[in-house]
Length: 161
Image (tube, rainbow, N blue to C red; front, side):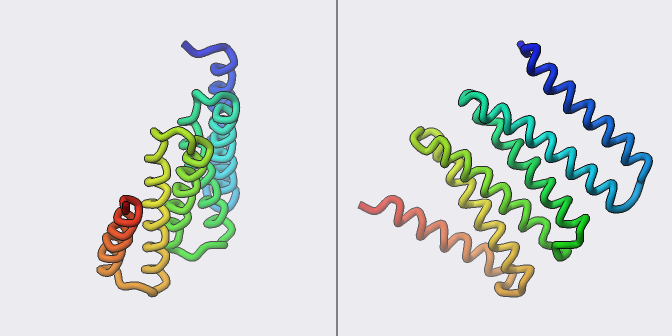
């Protein structure tokens, strides 16, 4: 059952989303629309981050908070032309990697959060592979081979006796 405070937070998110939707309808194209979208993602990230900081039982709220924040960064970078086309996926996987790493780092004493570190590593490797391919540093067919090589080395080093 949701408490009164939770309902208020959800109501605020819907209110802000409605205001942004109405304002974007007034300015259908351009920078203003992208900025409103980024502000909405930041507001949503703030709501989830507040839950995460409030109580340890809400550990899962860091995931949507991190992804919403990453989407806001992507929107701002694109709206302000600060990122080259084709690099948005690199920003997304980098943000996902940081989100999973933060989750693991804040709960690293608990063994059942090891999956977060693994997903942080996988997301970082994907971001690096996409960036390398975009920059022309590595051939597309070599990315899978490199990923398998790095995974094999990591598993061997982790399980050595």
